[in-house]
Image (cartoon, rainbow, N blue to C red):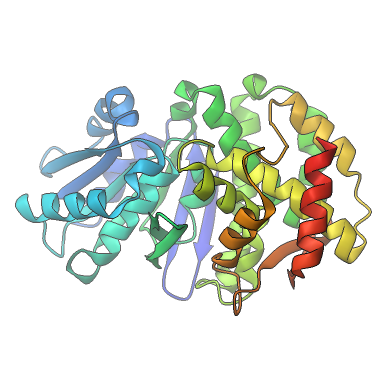
Length: 358
């Protein structure tokens, strides 16, 4: 399957299939790069780096750098190490970076590519389900202790090569994390996809290759449509942050890595559904949705340690906030997202009610 991404700054393809990595050599040869710089992490490297390197052109020199796994990669010290490694190994403006890993590696490597010598090419080769969302659209960033993805730029990749064979080594927690973003795309844009997911996927360990190609491809199509309309997140692209306002607050207050991104976002989506019911009169059957995600192994409750004041303070720092007033992506109905300012009193009432229901 191939999905075309068209933005004002660049158009490129996302290739999704088993064995897609075999297309990498042809893509690189077409660009005539001087050197390749592979950024991967300490989990993906030992598992899959040899597979990637076997596809590289023989006459193209490649260097590699392994960063910590997960959100620990997205910090200034690691970013600086990546830049210094690039200089030490003679990368120039005609070199290329390959982001090989999950969403954190893609965010970091993309930011390195965007800022090294004021910007060089990079390829996204995602190895997780979660990265079907983060690898597309050009967002690159690292974290601050007080907020996730607060330092970054938009920098579109040359190509995204999504070989679903890499997904077969994922632990269940990572499958669950990535699948949450598939659910997000269904909730904001495609009621039929949501119906398909709820009727056909009752165990995350039983998703077939054909199912993966369909649901990941459809998620990327949804994101492509939004990104083509709003590349720099000045308007409609904010709907892709459904569930992320509270989700990012959970991640930041817990300490990055304590919750996977998708697990935190799933809690945030349930909270946003309740807010949508209170503020917009959403009629969706939230209890049925919660029953389904519990069946898939998600924990939908707000962490006990998290008070509303802590959550609200973190949500005020969210990038969608205006004048310290949190704005949430809510649903008027499934497939019809809207961006709304939510009064502190309603946010607190819903937060407390939601917490007491669990």
